[in-house]
Image (cartoon, rainbow, N blue to C red; front, top):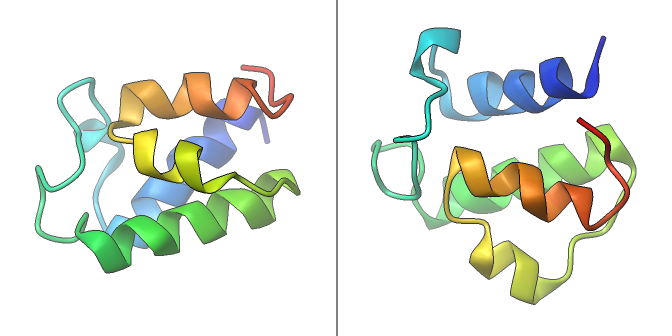
Length: 79
C-alpha cells in the first residue's frame, strides 16, 4: 500500500467517508465528523500508520486534506 493510499484510508476510516470525498475542499469542520474529536482521531491514526509523532503546532495547522500532505512531509513521509 502506498503512502497516499494509507493517508486516504485514514480519512475514509476515521471520518466514515468515501474516496470520492477526498478533495481539496475537505477541510476541518467542512463535514460533521471532522470536529475536534475527529481531528484528534485522525492525527492518532496518521501517527500510527506512519510511525511518527506530530507536534502540537502541526496538529493545529493540519486544517485540510490538502495541507495534510505538507505536514506529513515535514516528518519524512514521502508521497
